[in-house]
Image (cartoon, rainbow, N blue to C red; front, side, top):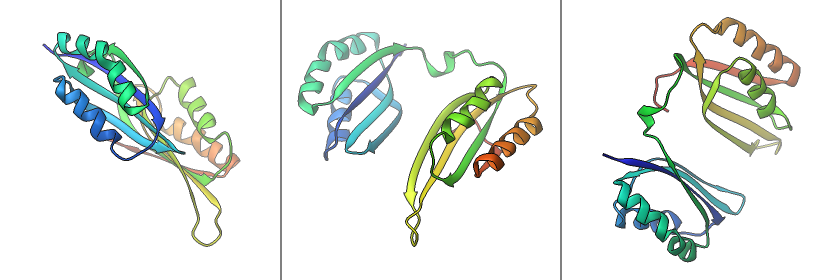
Length: 180
């Protein structure tokens, strides 16, 4: 039976980090089941779900110092449950996207509305890019949310539309399958 870990690592970016991390895990019979990796500023960041036999994961924890030394990354590991063992209230997955000229508070205001309605954010990504001609910073946010059964989607849409009108944000919600 598989056991599970979440591993996070952050540090100066350079070519080869994904190869070194994945080789280290594979050599210890740890499977990467789910992951997100990105370069943010000059820093490489990864969060991943790994699985393997309990003994392999214990050995991995004992050997993390080697990976830290070889990669110069700050690394943490935590045991977790199997993805299908997670207790999730009945809900429906949706995609939420927001676009706007960049300004502080966009993520906070949207997440505040979701939080007060007990809507869980399963994944979230944001990005700022500069418009081709004007150079204006343009913000995009994409996330998968789980809307509890019984929550009125029309009411949520209305509240997000009011926020969008107030903060000049285009916010859209559409149904999604359970996969990202």
